[in-house]
Image (cartoon, rainbow, N blue to C red; front, side):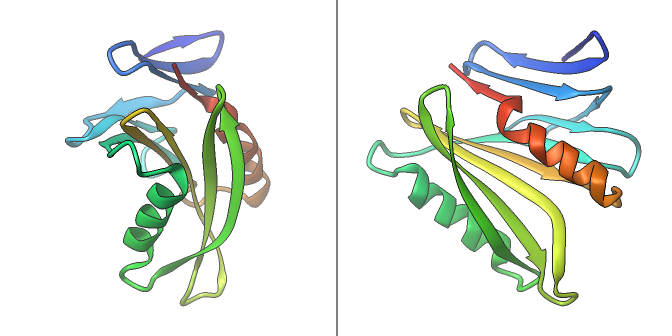
Length: 148
């Protein structure tokens, strides 16, 4: 991870992925199957880039459905938005969630992508962000991930 011109870059040539986030983010120790974990500030917004090995016949829609089931399994969150994207020619989906108990949008978004036998999951959590800051960050999420 490095910082250039006020932005944060994560590059992983082994897996052909890169992440470009506006502003200064610092790294935390990733768990297995995570490429990187970045935080804006202590207890603030966080970004996790993770990966999975998937069979060739599993498409991005099936992968997103699997992710959705895992996220919704405890009943706290429910998906309220799914937008189709294209990342460097590969199909992808952006998922948004709402807090079921409170009935309001949660500051959690995910980009799900697949290339070959690799599934990619970019999770963005906007812990206690102001709504306009959250919307600005969300607007930059689809362009933040590069898959080669």
